[in-house]
Amino acid sequence: MPAALPALDEFNRFFWTSGADGQLRLLRCGACRAWLHPPGPVCPRCQSHDVSPQVVSGLATVEAVTVNHQAWTPALAEPYAIARVTLDEDPGIRLTTRILGMPAADVAIGQRVKVRFVAADDVHLPCFEPV
Ligand SMILES: [Zn+2]
Image (cartoon, rainbow, N blue to C red; front, side, top):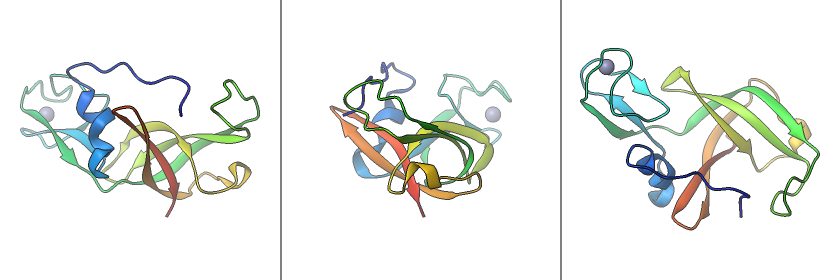
């Protein structure tokens, strides 16, 4: 159980609940085809309002990682790896996430990972694990 869950709103609800069917989704602009994150009502590249959630592969690469040795809450067993990952669909899209399924100390920059959702209430947190 994560310590704190994101506050859902009309723009981000699809993102935080997308994992209910095991798929990660991001907004994509129907006009210029750009992927958008974090979610919002307008494409920041072309100002189109034609944006909608689309399924992505869930594949990503670790761009930065830190290993946390402080158990900030009882829910987080230390040590754990917090990483910034870039998504295959657009390396400009970055998610800050936890890396699961491998020793935290072994997570390295360049590690290939795939999304793995951690469910809490109706939120499905997109975490990642080694491919
Ligand atoms: Zn656009």
